[in-house]
Image (cartoon, rainbow, N blue to C red; front, side):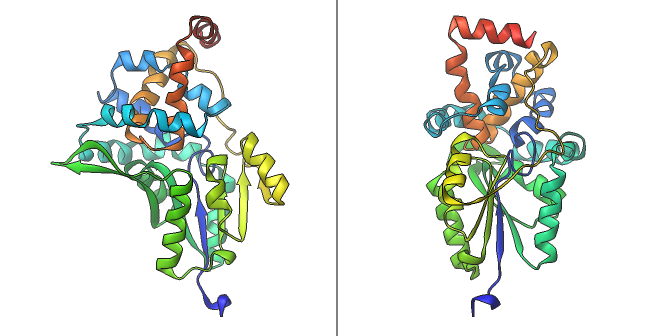
Length: 281
């Protein structure tokens, strides 16, 4: 009976499908289109580098959520969609792991349904899903009124909430989770990975790697393209940081978003910020 049920493959997005974050990928374009101020760019110069190198804790993700929601209040949805659509091929496509694209295609060939499930905002995830030929996205939702983001988070898919979304989606579509797959890089997604019969840790952070080894989960390394973990150079100090400032706000509940911006508080200490600025020069 279970063999007749559909099988799903649930993919996290940032650092699992793409070698950066959906926030950073589109961020430069938001800066160029006036949605991110230069001051905010300076304030969050090193957040992208911190996320790519070490990430941040679940607690810090939550601590920045409301601040980020306030930051995006009033952003026009139509403009965001225009920018992401027009710049998709130039700023995001090169960051897609070839291994992830091939794996998605393999699941499709096997007749599996592919779902991208992300803590990033749906408005950022959808254009990437279209590029990959994935029809189904389950992501963080933000309220819209009069064509603009209100700053209200109506659905925040992180940790246990992400697992609940997978559980509900499976129930609604008749999936047997014991036959399904899930892929992620982050320990915050352990609750989701534990739901399926085929959990896979992709480029796992330290905590997820330890958990995967302890539980006999498969671990995979995606290298093409190489992860973008370099510290920002002098030019990126003004541009890259703004990327995070604005787009992380847009993807307010996103794993990258909250992790990256949480680095702001630690980066404000005089000793640490001075050292980081010297590295970025």
